[in-house]
Image 1 (cartoon, rainbow, N blue to C red):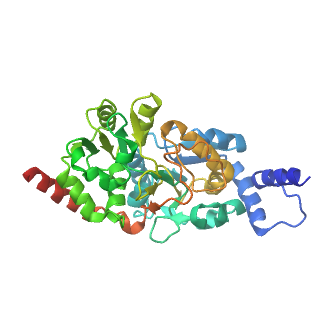
Image 2: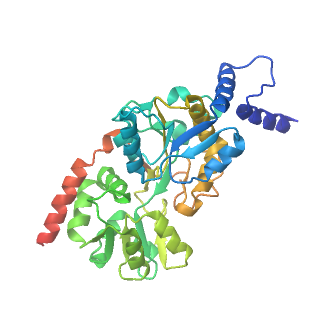
Image 3: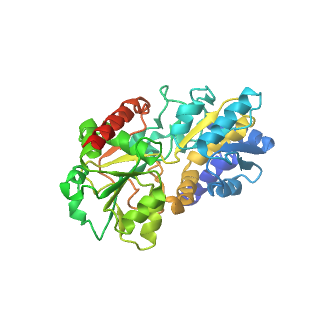
Length: 371
């Protein structure tokens, strides 16, 4: 009987039906939000193109049509939205995507409302359900850009025919003279996965600027901006290691049975970074459908919504929700946070400024050319 009642109560949270005569304050507000959202009948998102989790949202709330406005690349779509706002057109409700764009574009333009007051469901507000028993925000105020994903990310992939697992147990192993000229890396002067990786190395207490400088000056790195090319080179044996390769291409190569491996979050003694690849959410102000926006945010951050999000990322390298109370079977072992392992949360407001890192990179590459 207890299990049956628990299931009924869970459905009440989304349907707005109350079993008891007296409602908790959150429940009365939730029912009002749901009823008004259904009248609005629509929500417009800035997210990745055609996310499959919207199918789950439609099943939960068929009365509300969810559309994706981000038909262009992430930053381009957000810049377009700001241009429309300057023209008096307020078209977007919620931002769901990588953390860099809302932090560098939407937040400075004051286009985001605090998301904290929009969180209603107890299973969302209960910090015990989340990694490190707290909600992680990346904006300086700690209330506008909420992280919901934190995949473990190591930045080393290698050819298993050329490198034995015990030869790469630390980032410092990459400085072995044996690997000089045998490492291809994404060019750190341009944005991408390498920005996260260089932040990790630069700010890690066991690596730091000294390590990053030695890597760039001593190892004759081959730099590229083409992720697929780098993966092909390493999988084909032209190079032994790939640094900062995008995980999508890495996982595709591994699925094809190529001699390729991504160092897992548990393989390197310095641990790994926690990366919200597409795992930040924000509430856009002056939203055309404010109640549908609040409803969506609560559904998306719920156990049901985050389970759907994880499943939507299976074919894109996987993603590990910061919710700790949902199954992780859909998260590849390499990306899954492991109990007891070391992780560095690199998306801190004070670490987004890449000036010091880019200056070091420029100097180090200049030194390398002179050798």
